Figure 1 (tube, helix red, strand yellow):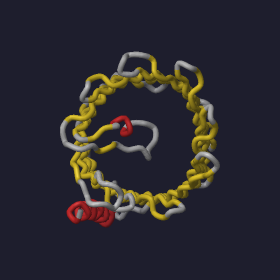
Figure 2 (tube, helix red, strand yellow):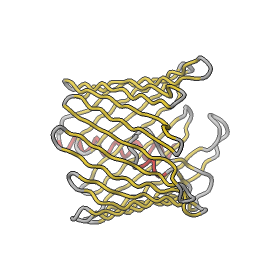
Figure 3 (cartoon, helix red, strand yellow):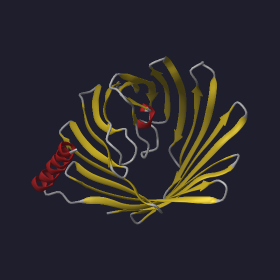
Figure 4 (tube, helix red, strand yellow):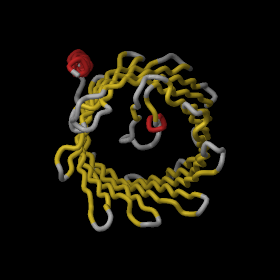
Length: 303
């Protein structure tokens, strides 16, 4: 843990050195997010997340602290610095005791995009005798000038690789015991200014796990995006479909994701945001046929 903390501080120190050399001005953000989750039969969990970030001279420092009525739930710290075409990032997580250290390097030369992530995670129960494991993620991408792209993400000792590329920044990969092959994610698609089509294929130790087919089209003025995702399970059968609608009319943005399965309506998520004078206000409401699943409200002040 001491070595992990030393490397984290070293990466942050490199970024501070870059700031001193470049004389760049600081920019950053401060936000507060409240998450309300109903608990049967008639209770409510409330979590508060406090986020902060500073960016300067190609370097950034970020923090996310989650607090509930029971006290500190988790603390996430991240430092990154960009050196020419290479980006170094490192971070630690406490839940509330030490649970993860990770280090990532990304870079490449057109059309190649290469990345690797190494993590050390404590699989033990919260604040119990540590049980450490090591995980590795290898990321290889090809981006062609015509708009076609291919990406391969391989996890050794980690799973839930889809969380690396989904639209929710708070989601993360999951460490498992052992360092052998755990999961493979293949992403193939085409992207232009208006149209995006792509396919995702996930494989685990048992073989094919699931697939996702996605297509979306974007209109420029006003900014409207209409898309659909089709999920296929390990038996190559229909699992779920998502209908996605996103509309942006400055300063207001709206995003709706409606999910269906073979029986009909499954769930709905509605995101609303508004940005005024450097302050972003947002909410995210999730519900299914049983009622409200969660409600998130928050603000971010940028400077």
